[in-house]
Length: 306
Length: 159
Image (cartoon, rainbow over all chains, first blue to last red; front, side, top):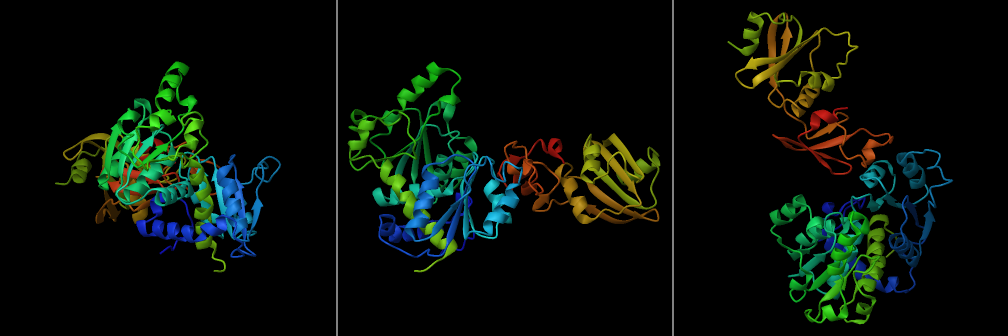
């Protein structure tokens, strides 16, 4: 059952709503792979990206076009009404008049919620500053469901767990599925206590460690994230930490059979390119799954033919 | 004898005939209460402020008396943001005709600014700040837009 008008944060999703998105995404996957569709014929999606994006923007565009719909783009902010000082509220009211739904990425936290208050059409949050990025979480869940299993899952979230918005909302969503979560990070980049206690209060088993080697043979999914150089004032410290959280085929030799490696991408050097050829690598499939998942959300919010 | 009557007896501030007396404000918070009520330095209203008087209930308390103005319930409830123990006395013809305690509503609009400098509500967008009241004692607010919590420094973020 999916009754939402907007997709703003993962916290607004119930377990049932997540299931309905993932089920619809599975049925739309053939279209994501190129099967012809005119489900969204005559419909228009507006992409309002106030910050650079490659994957999210292009996969929304692909999702809409593969379903036979059209896409309009805000384009670079320079030279547009935004550079003339137009408010976000006015921008979404105007562009909402041209399109059937808006996808927005904006550097300010809460911008998607503001947009939803002024837009005459559904709003999908594609990242609001350090806030939320719910479509990434949904495609992560879809990947886990397709390539591993969501029930009785044991997962390690690895890397920058302090600032990474992706892992915060993924951990929250996994708590709805009763996952067993191991947090692997350097001490300085641990997941905030408020999020950990929120997870524990939902009955989720949460463990913390600094040692990736300790968990490699215990988990079904290794969810890697990028450790950003700018978080470390000292480059020596950065190099020390970054090398501890770098996986190679040799390191993967100790993994459970069937373990999958995921990453929201772009990666820097936390996954050696040679891991790509191992049966564990799933990050490129994960990236592809953004298309059927976003198709499902568009279909649920905009409607369109069967 | 109530603390207000004791206060009146000592004649620290003259009793008022008509208006509102806000009692049991935590010591030192009276000026913030005036801010919440929108009473600025340029007001025409007759306002008396007593600060840091002894109180059995609060050790030290402030009292605010606003003459010829009966506060609306929603104005009164905002006071609970910084003075959850406050009591409100509506005075007519020198008599207390109504006594109320404060109770925060579920949402506070346009009174407290979000503390997150990167929140969309701190820009020039045509919106008012909106804070959801998550707990009332102690007061825990959460910005509707960016979800950042605000708890112990509320007075600093009053608009």
